[in-house]
Structure formats: C-alpha cells, structure tokens
Image (cartoon, rainbow, N blue to C red):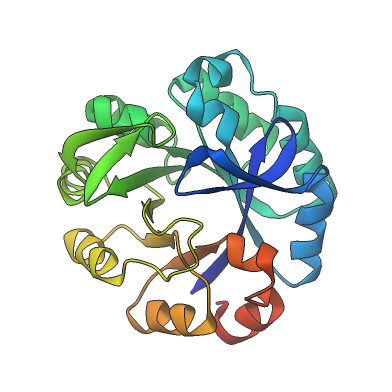
Length: 245
C-alpha cells in the first residue's frame, strides 16, 4: 500500500482544517517546502497536495492559485511524486498543473457536475487524472466541501468507471472523519472498492498504524495521512517501513 503524506496549502502556508471547516484551521508551517523535505527524509516517495484556496474559490484556481509558487518550490526541491487537488475545474488548469511537474491532478467538483467532461479529460490525459470523491453521509460534497449534492459517492464512481479506463485512481474522503483522528470510514471504503476496479485511495481519519494495517489488509491501494503526522501520533518512517510498496 502506498503512503501519501498530505500538505494542505492556504495562503502559501501548510495548514490543516477540521472536517473541511475553514474556520477551524491550524497552521503547521509557514514554509511548506521544508515540511515536504521532512516527509521526503522520512522515506516517502509520494506527496498529496491540496490547494485549499482553489478548492474554496474555483475562480482563484482558474486565474492561477496563490499556492502555485509553493507547489513549484516543493517539486523543485524534493523531487517527489506529487498529486494535487483543489479547484481544478478546467482543461487549462489541468494542463497548467501538469506542466509544472505534478504527476497527477485531482478533479472533484466538476467531475460531479459534468461527468462526461471528466471522462473526456481522463481520455486526453490518460492515467494523470484522479477522481476526487469527497463524501458527507455517503453523498458527494463539492466546492471545497461547502455544499453537498444529491448524488451518492458510489453512483458517481460507477458512472465514471463505466465510461473510461483512464482514471489513475479515486481519492475517497469521508468529511466527517477528516482531521478528527478517529479512523477512516472502513465500511464506505469497502463499498467503494467493491464498486470499481479503479485503485482506491483512503483519505480522512487515518491516524494509527492499526488503521493502516486494516486498510492494507482490505486491499486499499494507498492511504493519505494528514493531521496524525503533524500531531506526532503516527510516525511516517515507521508507516512506510511497514506498509509502503
């Protein structure tokens, strides 16, 4: 199972939100590149980046995110395999991030609203796009988790999977678990894995080695770890030693 430490970016800083609430923010570093280097030195080959400014306001992402320079610095200084999500809602934004050197780009909100468009983009950028499925009570949330749709997460995944084989992975986040250090939603992750052959990445609530052991035993492709690393309750080097492919 791959281990992806997370760096959430807002205003050029490394932060974490609780349950996606922008009013419940903790700043962990004013230099995300140093944090990325710390995770690299712990042994990771992968890094999960979130552009929170873009996620909250898609127009910011379209104009060029205020976090672009930080992402570029991380890519240049660490040489890690990075994926990024947050406000990616156009072909131009996908191209801009990929040309910067990102390995994969995550699309969420527009994939829900226009699944046919996402399928076209997946075909144009084969195995470079990740479907970001953020769910609240099993229903897909959008716009930086500010809104909840009437589409179930499983239904969206099945629709996309039936139309293309070019999606690199699915990042599934249970909002109720994100940043709460209470473990992932194992039941919904199992439903997601059963719904598709696309590799499923667990995000939200991963906080112990036991969580990782359960995810790995269930056949989860990868796990994203955020707050547990910053709080020190989970040691990245140990997680990589035990579970990293």
